[in-house]
Image (cartoon, rainbow, N blue to C red; front, top):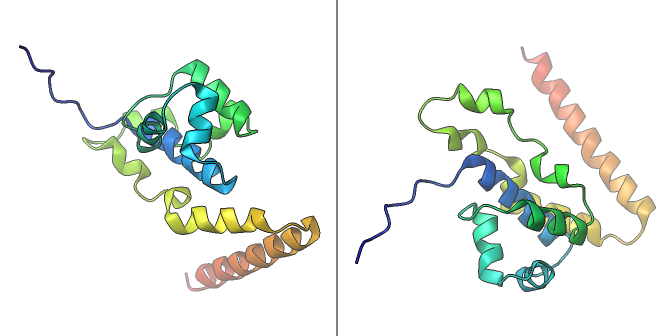
Length: 144
C-alpha cells in the first residue's frame, strides 16, 4: 500500500481566505454547521477551510459569499498582492502572520460591535475608535 507524500504547508492565500471566512462567520454569529449546510459540506470541512488546510472551490466561495452577505472579493481584501508574494524568500506564509483580522481579539470586537442594535450608537462607537486610532497615529508621527 503506497502512502501519500507529505503535504506541504497550506498556501498563504488559502489561509487568508479562511481567516476572512471565520471572521465574517463569527461576526454574524453563524456556526460552522450552519455554513456547512449551505455549502453541502460538514462542519469539519468548514474548519479545514478556515485553517487553510483545504482550498475553497470557486462554487463554494460564491455560495459562502451569498450566505455571509458579502462580495466574493471580501475574501481577498487586505491580502498582499501576488507580486509581493513572488518576491518573498522561502516563507510566503510570514506575510499573513500579523494579520490583525485573524486575531481572536479582532473577531470578538467585530462580533460585539455588530451586536449593538442601534445604528446611531454603532456609528458613535466607530467614530470613537477611529478618533482614538487617529490620535494615536498623530502621536507616533510626532515622535519621528
